[in-house]
Image 1: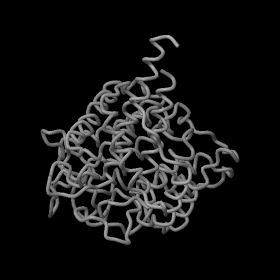
Image 2: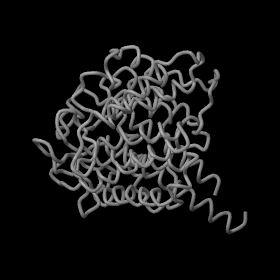
Image 3: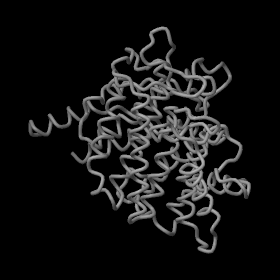
Image 4: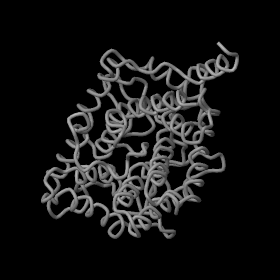
Length: 379
């Protein structure tokens, strides 16, 4: 074996970490499907299932736009489309949001990409329910939701309040809508998706690069909540990849550069607080907080994806440590342990309880790690 090839193998080995077993992944997926109930849980599940089981349909592939108009037995996205079908079938006729009566204006939009995919791939072209549902959700966000003085669309419906979570729920949907639409309409929507990321960063980012969780409104959360930073980084990543793989990519070169910088700000700042065992804390920079595998998994997934996107492996050792921790933290039933309570933000998940979104984060992490290994094999 030649020395240069030996060196390449050694370098690749140092940058890789064994992934999760198929049996573990099957259990994680089952627990995800049985536990996801809230609007953002369903939307996050749909995205995770797309990346995990149907990567050719995900925005991380060159095949993303346009998706196939006819799905096959081998590429049917049945679990993703099932979420879209059930959501649209339950939506009241007079509701613009995909799920009515939510305090959050943003969370229902997280299911929007799945609904758009269902519309694009519907076998009966006379069916208009998916198109109308997605268009109604977009109209509600752009015209019926309050905004900050700077133009940031509110995460909440009853007042202007900005949550880091918004970035995963809304801009990826708006961007995907635009990428499917094409033409001038596409450029306008893709710019809106980017602008919302920019406006939220302006409002929530601190000098360290970490984002505060919640600003404005009648209460705030100034902590650098781990999952909030994960939502922000992962949401901007989805917008970045949508821009990159859309037919309008050449119009958004500068925006892609900014998003790349902004995502790396969050991941780089986060990993400086990583503990020796691989975990991040629930409040990333608070040593009095508690370990949280959920945000650790989500931020590691972003790190693997960004390494493949930028060909920069400098943060991979941190992601590998995180993956190793997550693997050890999944119990025999497929539940991720040691997560934050997603409904209280600042308490651990109680014994016997589980975090549905954390199950999705595990699948996102596996899918991103798989993509990273594939990227390494091509180098």
